[in-house]
Image (cartoon, rainbow, N blue to C red; front, side, top):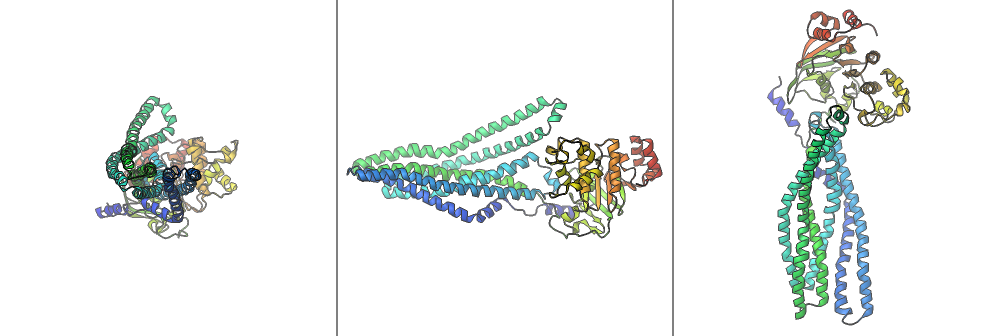
Length: 609
């Protein structure tokens, strides 16, 4: 049994530092520093234009009207109309630049997250619902880049410039009115900060509920057949309705509070402050301390300051709320990556072809307990070995350990005399072709699925692999042949057809020297199973073969059988030897009531292929 120190070291390795969302955002913004600079220049120009406009009001009321200067009045009116148009032009350009920057941040986050997920340990990744992952990769990244960066963070430059410029202009026009205006700002800020705490919590709850809803909908869409077969419509409708209603309640409360946070400054400044300024300014104008034009200009600056302040506070509030999305993405970045990715040395060739596979004193456990206990066995080069045993005994775990989808807590695994931990994962997995029980199919053509992951393939090679897996005749009878779409997750194909495609996919990898089948014929009829058996026999040249099976007919021609029970090697020998021993294999053999031909094969040993 592995020591506690080994376990502690394994946990420690899983907590290695990883990239975070904020780091990706900073790097992307730095890469677009010139675009950001151009956007800031456009913001400055637009703000300057809008700050000049109220001065035209002052000149109109203080000079043009009292002096009846119609020429000046017409010029000022033209300038008043032209300045917003010029500001709109600047706003359009800087808006376009902001969208580019925000989209780039979103793209960089999505690429970074997906690149990390491609190498995350499966035991960590499989604990998170797929819908939850999709939500984070799409919605959370979009919130940060396209919504926050583009719509809130970058515009705050314009708002800050406008707010500062407005205050300066108001101070220049009338100090007392400027002081009154400034008194309202701290109170508004403190009230907004207080309310934003609750808004952030509501946004976090809404985010969690959105993930739960999308995760359930993702499951439900893939379970329509099961729902109908088990009359589960009522149960599913109630569960889905409950989730949607809870999400709506949280969303409505959060949206209402968020609106209060954003609208509070506008209501205060536009109502109370504007009234106070206008009232006080009117008395000053009657006393001759301020001109009518200056008062009108101050009143024109006030809504601009109000809008600018509202934007600044919205950005502050958004910064607090966006923490939810940042932490959500950081949760994905924190998932432990496979230990051997990008490390170790690439092995150009295994020393012995076909290679010998050796498991030595392997211990491995999931959270529920040990799955493999002190497991040792050897598969000789070129040998065809069947692996059988009760369900949950650790058979499939052997494949995960061999391909390093999982890492043993102690012991070693070698291929051709080379420890698999000394190879890069790419080098190791390029030499192993696996035919899984649960076959994943891309929503692409049958040819693309067979050739995966090769994009530039020859159709002749695809056809050869399909013939070897008893698939070619079926495909040829389809109207579109190998161009036929498989549908999402192969929904348009039967289980047996998907298994034969998986076999063809494995046989397409002609450079592999190890072929592993995991219940790869469980969905096939007897005739198709026999064709696959013949294909396996043909594939033996230059390969070591391991076949995990519940149906003993699949491995009745194996050179040797390994019986795995409770994570240990219980029996080992030829089919004939194990039947004669009367152990666990013999009991499985009798329970499956193999036909006379199978009994003859096992009793007499493996015939020539």
